[in-house]
Length: 191
Image 1 (cartoon, one colour):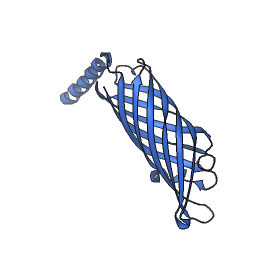
Image 2: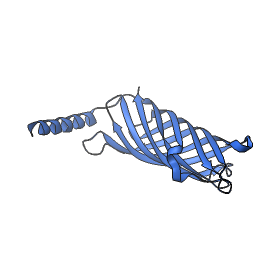
Image 3: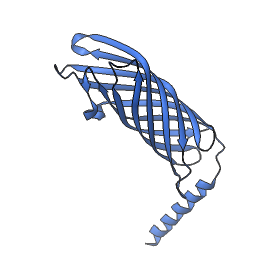
Image 4: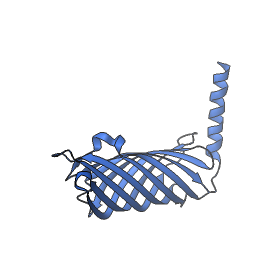
């Protein structure tokens, strides 16, 4: 029992001491991965099987102030689905490059946790492969998404984010996108 009280006291004191420390690092880099489910109006939906839709994200950012930052983002997503009438396997590949604006809350009490929200505009190159036809089609356009989640400042240099992302609009990608959503986990380093 004494060990549990000591452990909880140590965690509480270190969390409050960390929250009070100023940050002088205004640049950061991160890697993220997760699962995104897409709805493609002409070919059916694969949102039922999001585990087959991994993505990887690389980002870098600048903290404008304590509550706002701007990021550059590169994301690759691979998605598989079966064309509804024929059950043919279709592979979709998405390459995205863009910018995000992030708003962040103050620390939640005396903890190293805070909430954040993001809005992004992403130039997108989408490619479709139909294996049985050996057919390739592609399209490009712009995607807009929003997201939000929880950030844990592990220490002064590293943080971990868990977020939900929702694509709400696109330009020129009607054959490939109707909407998408999913979750992402990112680990970042301040410098």
